[in-house]
Image (cartoon, rainbow, N blue to C red):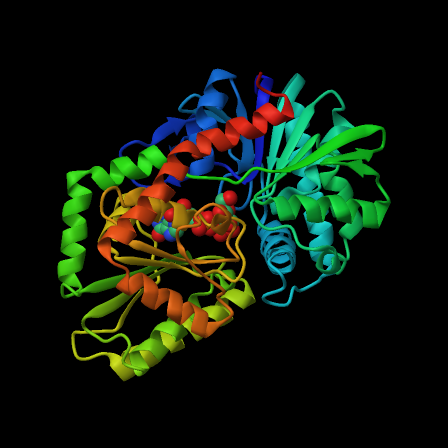
Length: 473
Ligand code: GDG
């Protein structure tokens, strides 16, 4: 039996990974056959919420990462973890289906056509109820429950029905679409009512909060004043809380002598080019990887860039590999990489180093330190933390960020080289401006953006949200 908590986080995934080998740092939990080792997974969300969770004897509810029966609740680094079971079929329908093949593309401006399936919708409902029931069970009287992201949009209303005494917050990490797109969703009223179960609904950008408020009015006729919606005798606030990163962690990594040495080594391994251009993304069609590669190819073809003076490194972390859209994307990206290397590479000197792999935080930091230009060109992105990580890692190095106007981060990182990723010429121009910017100007831009990030890190994001929710004084 888990103790009841005054502070509960509900997210699709628990912030831990199971350790299968004797990796140092893994903690043993449970007893007998259920002895399993876990390690806290890196991530801004858990870093930001860790102090609050520890201080308040908090509980995190989520999936453990393995299909089938859930492990018993356990404690790790001062946080109570309450696993929710997901079967193979739940994963296929609720997670890969409704979450990642319906809602994900729809909320990202339909950059790929969303797929609508009735059985996915039903699975989404069933799984959301499971998370809501778990939260209702562990939350203490009058507790604060913070629900995270697009996989769990029905949880706030389900939870309110079970436990009207709770204070419920919801944060959406991805964009919230304009009315005309949202209206395509067959489950639209149910999703909207699900979100309206919260006391505070947080978005990455103000525009998203406005889309939500207008949608509620359009679909349910709910009156509103400012950012407060009147719904079923309650007030629901909708506001923007742009998420950020653990700036200190990234700066410490970038300052670590081993990471710096590795950055020098990476440049040497790339043949000490004049310009290293970097992309780091989950292999996702919203990230604009193909567009970026195409822009680079056209610049090479026109002789505005050349190999080996410039080289591109594209890390494309494997993601959602069982979803069809992602399989098709991988083929397209890899074809483009092959084409560029075929046309412009030489034996031992590729034009693009393509890495379909996952890296440690320190290797990522070394890549950020090694790159003169970082390309972040999503077609649509709630925020994009990679852009913020690059800026934080640059310390005194200068360097230039090419950033899509369609990433939430563009609202804050105004000194980046901004571009419209749908306009190939604009991407090419922004990339050339970043490649050729003089050092003084590059440092100036970087230091303005760093100052902004130091004041707006992920701890501030969490405390702004929880203060607005009335969960902290
Ligand atoms: C969603 C929204 C919003 C990437 N490769 C590796 C690795 N990463 C890390 C990055 C970064 C994170 O993953 C990716 O975050 P993004 O923000 O760039 O993108 P999404 O995954 O799409 O995140 C997004 C975010 O939620 C937060 O609200 O910003 O808009 O789509 O931290 O560094 N980390 C490691 N190895 C890798 O190979 N260790």
